Image (cartoon, rainbow, N blue to C red; front, top):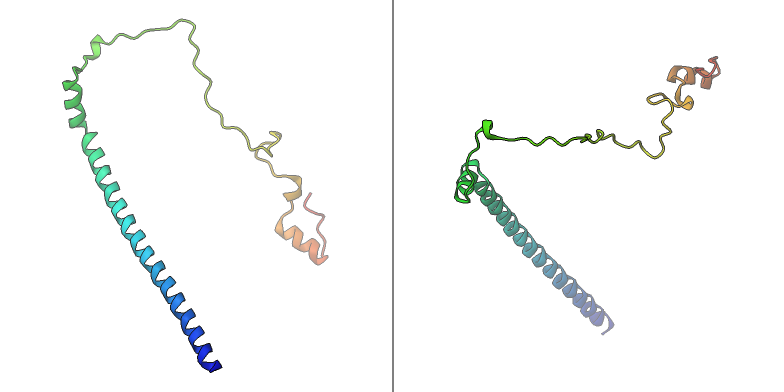
Length: 129
């Protein structure tokens, strides 16, 4: 009787695991289908945006809104006195940078591989200084 109960318990566990696995597989298939639908919608929206922002279409819309092409000789520029151009952008240095000796190696890294190997083997080499 005990072996029969053991077999039933193992069979029940097998069925429970199989049911979970089947549910998980179905969820994966549903998510893949949703992903494909979203990719298709994204491609359609990208195509629509490209069509709406094409130069010909933009020119049509501008003309419909009352804009018209400008003649370069009719453009008036306004000069502002005492205007100073902003300084050019300079990227900040990394936090560990000291700013001294830009582009030079730390003294700890000036020994060559050959000098280190000779020093390690005890055949000489003063340390690369």
